[in-house]
Length: 305
Length: 306
Image (cartoon, rainbow over all chains, first blue to last red):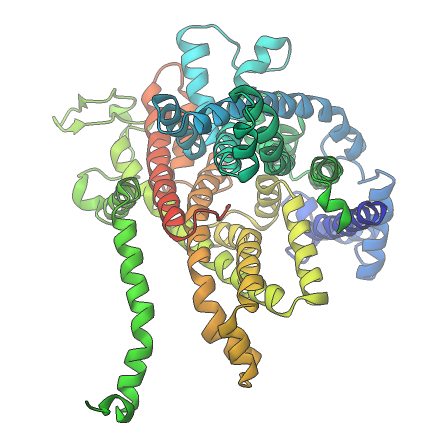
């Protein structure tokens, strides 16, 4: 088991190294990072001086080494717009993004797992059809449209909930629902199909034959086995949630990393963009590492591999 | 009794060899046709496709030309010329229905082109990783992990921000960064196909890797690939409209569903129809594709998780 976890840790480090390469290359996509960073009306001398100051004339590998060294210490350079270290700006916004993503995930899990179980246990009943149709709609609905529609109904028409900003729980409701719906739909469908499969297994029939009543069979025997794919998808869905926060935060003016990065892209403030992409990707990698550790607990067979 | 089959010309033997595949396809189409929701989805997608192509025939209005005098007319209102605006007009007096019809074009174009690029990339990667295994497989799968670590939209807008938004950039960015799902599914299929008798037999007879891959493995890995491609198209269309919504998609004045939503958001308290209908257009299209894709998956392989 130790070998397995160690190998996963090494793999994560390799992935993070790859992430740093991609983030570094974003600036070099057009071939000239100076032109990407400077405003379009910068004079030719300015461009030359800027290249010198930033070290863009150095060999490529030296520049990457400098970038990686900085990234490890949390130094992505100064924000061009705010004049503060880009990393600090992003870090400041992290809690807001985590709050939103966490609330979205919580809503998704609280709705999706019961819905998926009911749907599977009462297969082909009205409850199953309702859950299936809602999940299908949720999976097909673009997040930003849902957000706008929620604002239209709950903020503009009935004036029940605020449409923007961060504050109390009432500020969290609309953005969290918006962000969580897609994940809810995914997990509902996955729970349903996972439970259906498990409920057909021999050990469930054995448990029933031994006289175990329905409730423990569903909740203990079946759910624990159906939970394995659910745990995996939760790790992956966190990536969807962190990425989805870009759109949701923009719609609801939520002061998180997503909105900061969109604004940074509009302002050509690329140090902030790089820091944001790197931090969110790192978060995703770490959470999935954690998920793998939980996995070995849920499914002991993995430890043997 | 006749032994005619033995001396049949090569063409006939070829036709004989092809018959099982053909029969399989027929049976597949028959089973697919029994799934009413899948057919419904296909119908919806076909309708969106036709209306996008035939937009000028359906709507008499120009989607780009502004008419400030007729701005923000409610759905069903008539303008000074007495023409009916079924879904109303936008903040520049343009007919909303016309813009929605024309807005399907960039969505479908990006959808097809990006899916084709990422599908081919993923197919090739998956075939190589699954067939050769070992070191090559390790490297390719780590690349997949790296790709998946990025929040997709954020990486896409960062790259588009640097390169500048255009139809070409959007297709390239989505196409190049969406290969992982295809690669994983194809790889999984190849891993199990590699152990099957017909592949082992081909190898034992001395077929080269290239031939085994192209003649024996590729055709069998195609159907799961097709399921992924269909469902991925729905995702790509949502991403295209999200990019347009953020102002990093196909640029105005070309109508896009996402761009219309962004406009509509500004007028949310006075003109509800501006944000409502373009979103419904996205929802209907994506729902249609998802229904068809689900049907396709259930017909081919219900256990395939995508």
